Image 1 (cartoon, rainbow, N blue to C red):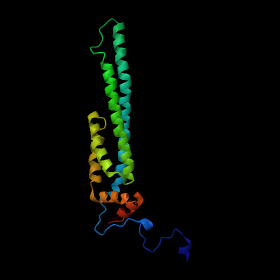
Image 2: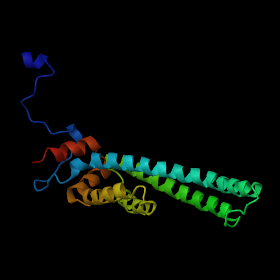
Image 3: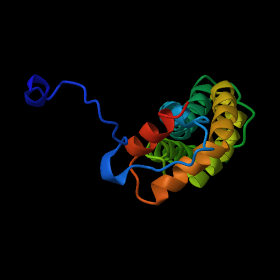
Image 4: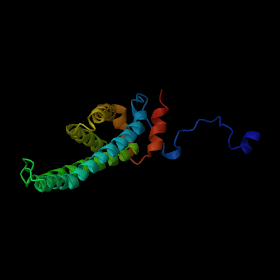
Amino acid sequence: PASESNPYTPSTAASPAGGAGAVRLSDVQSRGMVGQIPVLGILMIVQGVFILLMSVVLGFYAVFMPIMFRSMREEAAKQGGNAPPMPPEIETWMMVGLGIGAVFVLAIAVATILAGVRVMKFQGRTFAIVTLCAGMLMCLTCYCAPTQIALSIYGLIVLLNGPVSDAFRFAEKGHSAREIQQAFLALP
């Protein structure tokens, strides 16, 4: 009687997690690394923000380095000395090259952030794998090399795990991330 009026009293009847649309797992299914998916998604978002900052720095250099070289050449001419031994076309090439680099790095940053958000929803597993591999190009900048290498190794280990692959398939069937996590984390 008292337990019927109190909604916070634990029930004695076993109910499947997630209600009527619960994920049904086989008896041989293991938990695997499904619990690591939210961690991976958050780390991908953080790495994407770091890469985004690199894009901003490259964009800054694309705009201001040619101005600085032009200023150095003009200052040398005012003082009667020789201009730095750089061809005048270097300003244009630097602006174009760094601008293209900034856009390329920006694209990888946006893809990494988007993949991280989708991974947390158990969506876009293949996109996340491709993004992690493409992110390894950031090692060329040396700025994000240590964190990108660690994230790519960790991310590929998690995303290529068998139960994680099954969890992403459940999401394709319309189950929510919460239902999937409850079902897999209830396993021994």
